Length: 388
Image (cartoon, rainbow, N blue to C red; front, side, top):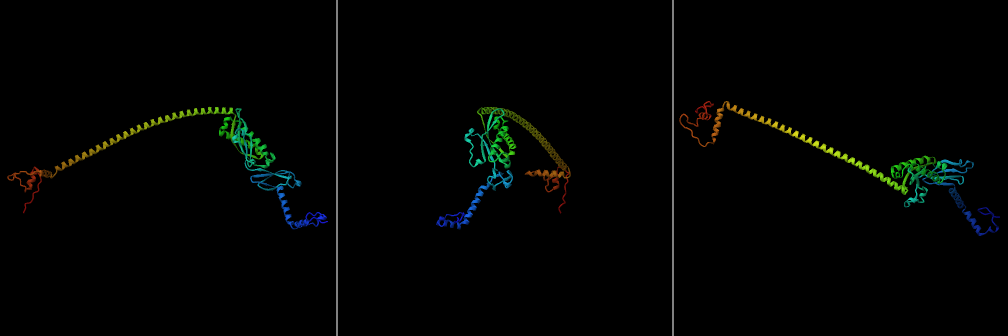
């Protein structure tokens, strides 16, 4: 009995020599290499899809060995090695790589009914990194309740601890962050009064304390809270009225304190102004006295200098007169007197003098002329020699 050309099975006698069978046999014989290549590629694709896993960017993984015959895949249980982005082998039913996001995760604790217009909307892309939960229901120190909307930013820092303590998948949300977050917020913010939730510094300080308390409990799970951000506190209407009354009383008290401080400041300002005016008046009086003193000193100095100058001038004039008088008393004084007398006669147009006798006037006799104007005989007269 003839055999099948590809599968090796025997063929029926009526199918040995049919044209269709011969055609198939020819096609298989001619394309056996291509068929073999397709089979190998299909086996590789099957192996790639079933025995490998690709860890995406922003993720890491932890391997858990479920069955390890003869220890081929290592010890059973969760391994300590952390797998990062890339292609890794994962044999079905024997080992499993659990992947977790390395990026920041968001837990939004919010009650949409409190503020339906601002209800959180999470897209399908963000569902992997965002989880919605009810707002934290906090009992304050005075017995009232406040619903606080918060956003908790956290990340996975050790996936090995996470798998060992919490489990795989999204269990870290329910059994990890959510079980710790609300309790920590209630503990730290429960010491506040309702109006303290609206004071940014006080609220932020308590939320930071709640974050630290969360990290103390989440560290052993491989989680870490980066930040706790407050969104909005929701109060019961009676609590809101009470807070408004307390705020109004506090504001009135602050207003009175401000007015008192303003009055004290105005009184201090008036005192400063009065002291300044008095100091200015004293300074002006001192300046006026100083000016008067300096003016009197200047006048006294000017008078003394002027008196000294007058005295020196008068003494010089007296000395001048004395020197002139002394000069008039010396030799030639009679001649000088005569010259002065002669000079005084320059304005006379005519004068009658005797021309004969002992007292006659001879203009050609210079000696007698000088003796006549000198008024005496003691004036020195130079006698000219007679002309030859």
